Length: 259
Ligand code: SF4
Image (cartoon, rainbow, N blue to C red; front, side, top):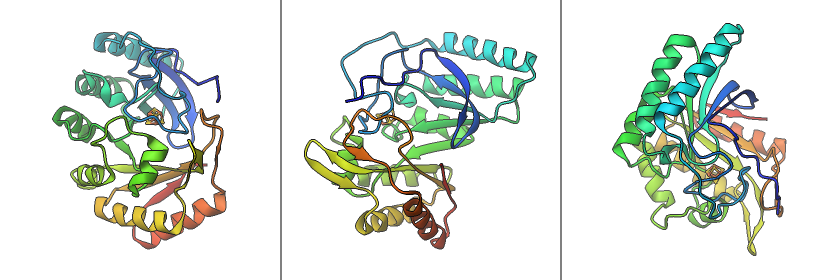
């Protein structure tokens, strides 16, 4: 086990250089040093879920901290490509997620109108009307689909809710009518005695079928880049990612590999 998870210490962090999002200013809606997530991915850089509790930041505090940071960046003549909701867990779990998104859009328009707003989400709450409304307003609505095969998804992502299934999430993702980007992390290994590999022929074939149903505006694929809480998993070769990307393109979908 990796005993050194990477937690966001603050509500606003960065800008950091992101593989997928350029110069990205991060917003963490979870408590510092505590991970809160409706998944428990084997590769999560925040570590596995535990019983620690922390104080969820208030929406006004987040707005003020973001305003202060954007003002400082502006005063220093810095630029940002993206304001990204990520951090120590699933951002849509914050009870005021919708209001926070609207406040962020207003601040972005004021300080860095050219910057995009991104939400990195695991798609577990995309049946909630407030979450859907907010996600429809952001520039980059990035939702996770690590496998379209039920047992593989459960092994890799370990959803905390039994009712979260591949069938359910594909249906919810379709409801965005293309205003969604699908993110998929490719990985293989063993966890608790169960071997998995989401790059096999059966996996890729099911995943591409799911993509064709969802019709996302883009697909982002990547593999491990940072230490993981489970050490019996491995990254996927770049050539394999390239071959997967080629198949997706042949199906008429836009895809980027984050390396
Ligand atoms: S969805 Fe993200 S934050 Fe949640 S466990 Fe997976 S990698 Fe970690």
